[in-house]
Image (cartoon, rainbow, N blue to C red):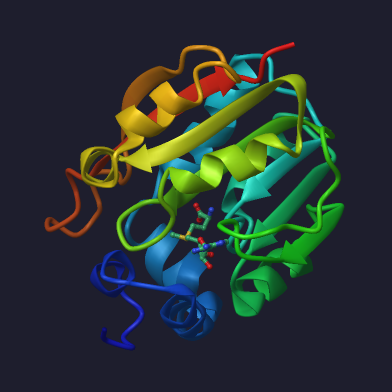
Length: 209
Ligand SMILES: C[S@@+](CC[C@H](N)C(=O)[O-])C[C@H]1O[C@@H](n2cnc3c(N)ncnc32)[C@H](O)[C@@H]1O
């Protein structure tokens, strides 16, 4: 894997160590050189969808990164917001924005020191994607969701098929409502042509009562 902090390097990640290294090198320039230049729409899509579906706090932002999704949640008046992320460097940028009640450095695919059955909402933008997190992490997150919690995750369209999200959601059928999926553009028209047409599903569902 290249250490160059780029989208292609991110999509080619293959483990936690590589992710920590890439996001260490990317954190300081992520909001400016990536999100602004590439017209990165996805965090705002996730936050808006969560708000439009009546989402409420406390909410957990999974793969919080520099806090772009929390910016959208806060604009919609939603809080308190907790966040988890593998990268201490991305979390440091998020922390400086003072949007989160709590930020935890943790791998979402393992045990997380978070309260059980607590969150009325869970959101995630850009983390269920190629080279990052697969559907196996969803079951672990559900342990931290309150009954009837609203969950809105973005899943890269290419990742959906290659990582087996259909089968994973079928296996969760007794624990959550049937997931709804809406397709959105990840980037706006100003993005690099190589990624301008990249798309994600906004997947929404609730835990059962
Ligand atoms: C593309 S960034 C998205 C950040 C932010 N949500 C956004 O939309 O701007 C992906 C984030 O997922 C985090 N990440 C990757 N693998 C992870 C894992 N296994 N557990 C927790 N966070 C992870 C990375 O550190 C990075 O901050």
